[in-house]
Length: 193
Image 1 (cartoon, rainbow, N blue to C red):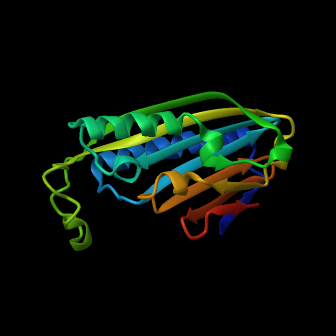
Image 2 (cartoon, rainbow, N blue to C red; image 1 turned 30 degrees about the vertical axis):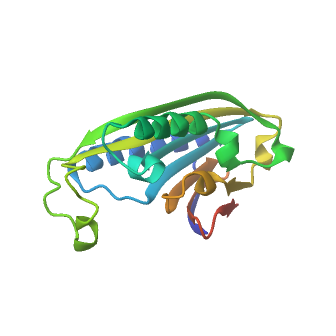
């Protein structure tokens, strides 16, 4: 689903916009409420290089947001980290583009929310003592070298098959033609440009 497109944006400027937006989002997340079921993905293409930045709440990835306490929780985190380090299993790029992963960096970031004492009624059940204003987020950055990155005109989000608690990803796609925003979900999991 295409939301909007900005023509004439250079890829370098687009990457700067993504970084600025992510930094601004991080600041707002430190101050504002945390939304389960919603993550973000930025995709930037320059020549034959593709870069992706993914941010998803821990609840969507492993089903909890505190430090893993049990052996089962520790195994869930280890399995999630291992799966997130294999982006082509999560984000299906067209075979014709000939893309190979050149780097995959995955980490867990703990966030502390100072003002989480007024969640919406629908979120009160989720805001149990497990949260207490602490949230974790899985973040990944990926780089790909492609034979012809211009052929990356679609992405199949197998991500939703692996991470069943994730409901939606807001995707920003930047290439030489400009910037386009999409909302992909379990129900509408293919992005086509």
